Image 1 (tube, helix red, strand yellow):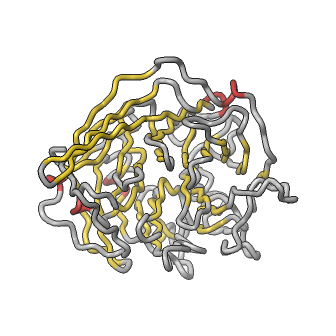
Image 2 (cartoon, rainbow, N blue to C red):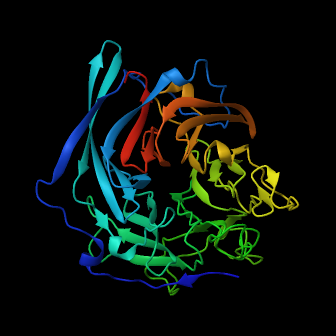
Image 3 (tube, one colour):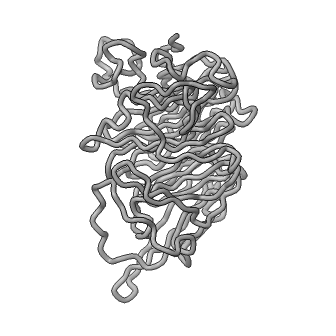
Length: 429
């Protein structure tokens, strides 16, 4: 069954979507001084391989708090904008402006960054968002690759999952620019996914849970014709002069564009993909999928020439839970097995992250960082050719770890549902 509602362009009054900033309305700043960085940037990695993490691992990194917001749940950076954006589950998007200064210290350069959280949200759609329970709310946040458009996903007051677009001004969405792209019917409050990301192909990807309940009651996981239990891929860049009234296009390369499933579906067999990401150096796709009650899983889907990672992949739910059968289910043909799985009892819900591609922590380059909402520890995985080489905790603890974020330089951040936004930095930075 396909759960889908297409909507045309909606122009909403500014009072319903965008709050204007107040004059001189800023919180105190947080200033962090990084450890000396090389004077010349190293060449970026272009392979999926890396060496195992050096010993000892945990002593190399620490967390630095850069801001505190209300229930942070998603993170995005915008091209050409010296700021970070954080979504609050209750419906607001907050901007953290970064000011960077650099000075020479011998043969190295020392950077000082000041983080300033703006008091007034750049976007507040709290009146349109249901954030009851632990899995509803404003869940996803992304900017177009040129930074001109903002995309958000959220659970609406109608109980359905919404994807909206805004045109961006200098620092905030333009009044009246809201455009509803896609609304998906839902039947329960949990398993809403919500992750948004633009892939290396320039298309928009949206992760959807199986609809909720327990045990995939509607069988959405193994049904590629249903938008639930899937990662979707769409092209929101519809030319205004087009005769097509649809608010987005389906890319020709989608696996079911010609039939056999919903044309928007890119990958399926997911229970609740709580954060996926593309490796910025390789295009590989990493997915953290929350388990039923026995196994949490991380899946690695390699790209071909930097593109098409995960195309048509079946991650197995609800025939498989992680690396084990679910209620005696047989492994589906072509099952994309997880690269790593662990008992749910060791945490409660996996929180997917990113492959580290920054410059400041060389020993982590190429490692995939992730965690668990309840356990809170940040872990690193190292893979080569799809095989796990190394896995370890990094000695970092984030209470109620909801998400990770990546800035334009490839440096990583971690969000706590309790409020803090952390930057992962070298020890002593």
